[in-house]
Image (cartoon, rainbow, N blue to C red; front, side, top):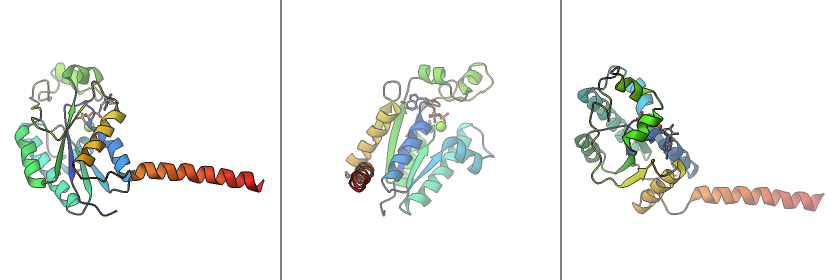
Length: 203
Ligand SMILES: Nc1ncnc2c1ncn2[C@@H]1O[C@H](COP(=O)(O)OP(=O)(O)OP(=O)(O)O)[C@@H](O)[C@H]1O
Ligand SMILES: [Mg+2]
């Protein structure tokens, strides 16, 4: 399917749910026939920025590289899904300016919940002083002031968050209202039921 490329930029604290949501979102979009590439914080960092740490400057250099890759993807009609803490407002403004078709999704979650989830054990290390520059502990997280979409993972399930983002993308005109995924499900059901009828008829 030919479509206009755009970037969905998921920002939020570590453990807020960016990767979890982005993966489901990617699957949903691909099921609808869209081409969507996930640029996930850890994975991309390993490949693109193994030389960089987490100082403000390094975070920014890394994020600039991600913006560049997103630009290459989106200008070829691919949806770039970026899941990156991206704690600084000024940087997200830069990404928006560079990428133009930019949907900022604030994956909101209280720091208390993130500390409780601690899926990578990073907060524990930061609170023990083993990590000196953890966002939300020593480093700031600057909340988006005017994101296109906000999801609240303290209150909403993964599925609800993905639905909210899909609705937002439709509202913004980036994806069509027609849900190919639903059609496919219906078609599959019809196909199964159809073969059932045939079997009954032939037996
Ligand atoms: N509504 C929700 N949305 C997303 N994740 C949720 C939700 N509720 C609970 N979780 C859980 O929270 C954790 C989020 O971890 P995830 O790796 O997605 O965070 P992240 O924002 O990508 O963190 P990081 O910035 O460190 O990569 C997962 O264990 C996930 O199962
Ligand atoms: Mg992640």
